[in-house]
Amino acid sequence: MPSTHIQAGVVGLIADAGPVAKLVLFVLLAASVFCWAIILMKWRSLKRAIQQNTEFLNVFWHGKNIDEIIEKVGKYGSSPIAAVFQSGVKELKKLSATDAANASERVENIYRALVRTSNAEIAAYEHHVGWLATTASAAPFVGLFGTVWGIMNSFQSIGVTGAANLAVVAPGISEALITTATGIAAAVPAVIAYNHFVGQIKRLSVEMECFTHDFLNIIQRNVLAGRKGH
Image (cartoon, rainbow, N blue to C red; front, side, top):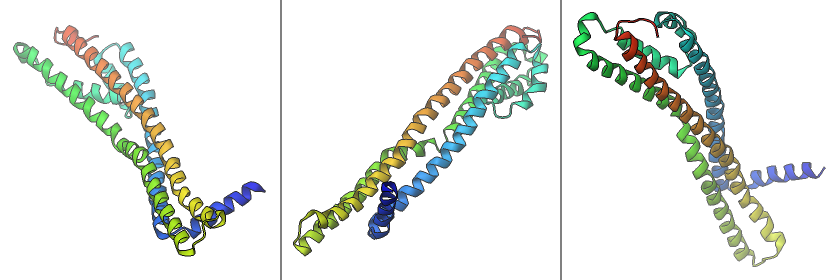
């Protein structure tokens, strides 16, 4: 029963709020909905990327040769490491027997292709993540603005009526504090999700960097030396 009264009270305060408070609440609600959409999207994509990275690396290190890995790489479309591998193979195929004199230059080209793809993959995963940080830092202040505005209106009402008792002040203050509460409610999930996703993206970045160096060592040690296995 008390919870019902509380819910009804909150709804009533929002319904009776002034236009500025309603605008603030609408902005915060829209930002929160957008953040939750980003959270769900990034959670799914990063989870899939980490899982497929593990599966692809298992195939890579247990494959007999590069050709065998190339045949299986299509199964890991969500793996950023698989994308890095494909870019390296694409550049590797440009090598030929006549390029022996320029082997070091070709290795450098392969390295640049690997790094370029790694950076592109990281940029794709970072897309929209910055919005979470923006919401986490700005939402409490937007809510605070609504609160300050509401308190100003409450003091104006006190000045007009000449009464400063609790019955006059409390409704206006309660209405004003809703915006701060909404701002905090929008910011907390955003900051938690942002820190979580930044950690996962950093993990993917480290994995791709390690793979880049390992793959380049394999090319230098075997492929450029005329051997096909790794």
